[in-house]
Length: 528
Image (cartoon, rainbow, N blue to C red; front, top):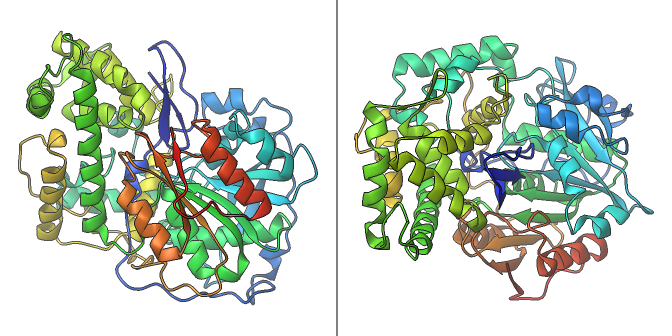
């Protein structure tokens, strides 16, 4: 099984070990809007007019045990040093006197005299931010950072301990994977009736169409600025991973004068539209699959064979029969083609997890699917009682508020390009695809490019792994270019490199920047 922090699997575990709480849908994070975004909107000092009551609120912190939303949270939040509370923000920032919502907040208090707060986001979008902040406490690089910063995580609007919570699908629908899986799949199986029904169910289960229409990245960036003020910081110090790099870039474009420091790890290029980004990402997935297959081929027992060039065909031979005939696994469960591909995809996020892929495919060749289904369940944070937390629904809602809309013809053409870039994921059915957001009650609000030509932004740092399967190095280079950031290149094969893997070279460079505001040298490089 895989252990995941910050939306990416990080270490190889046995099938009997319980996963850490924050799982990922980082691959869901590549959505954007349809028109250039607005310029920076806040003066250097003070709250925007009409928002004073939100910017001046006081957080009432208490024990975190009451804020647990998963079984792993129950264990994680037993740490008495952790402090939790709720932040009130407007649902619609253009309606200051209207409906309000609450965000779940977790603080890991500094162990020394703090400079201020380090606000963190694990990606996803909508992966559990409170859990991520709590988990960072156990990383090798935390002591130096934790001495000088309160580490603050938040559950994005509509997710985790935030209220109202996005709820689009039943647990039964989640288990079938027909209506809720990663966005690599849904659109090629949904009918227009289903896309319409999904938008309707999301609105009904989440508090109304106005709620699900205000769950985009620009809304969350505004939430972050309220949080910055409420924790007492004049300027934001921020660490975002994967989708969190988009969130940081959007904040930088909207509030450049409020930035102290930004560390963006596993970057998304803000200049690319949805099709270019998805093709870039799928190219990264295929590179990772090919590298895994090459490594596997060194063993005569490799379930993909000993010829890496034939690995995709061998993979198809193993998994494509599941399209028509899912494999029974346990009581009432089935391993589908989508499950098997998704499990492999998650395991590709870190080289140390490649043996899990080999073991799972070896089982599949023998007619068993327990391991692959367990990895899929872990990726979805499926609970022991068969229930699902709603972070994937939160990711779906963010996706629909950010990405530009496509016609069925455009969506089909895009998905064909995606699968041409990552043929191992192709089920061979050549279906007509639909935009899963086509009946969302509001137009997207992100716009693209969404973070270019920013004036007044201080030096920032982008960290990019050369062999990142989900956020290809090209995306990190593009993000650094757009923001004028210093790029820290990391040679390796995993998704992201800051704190979680425990690489001293990376963590030292990031810590020095966060504390001293000294960026890495030009052409700085680390190796995992």
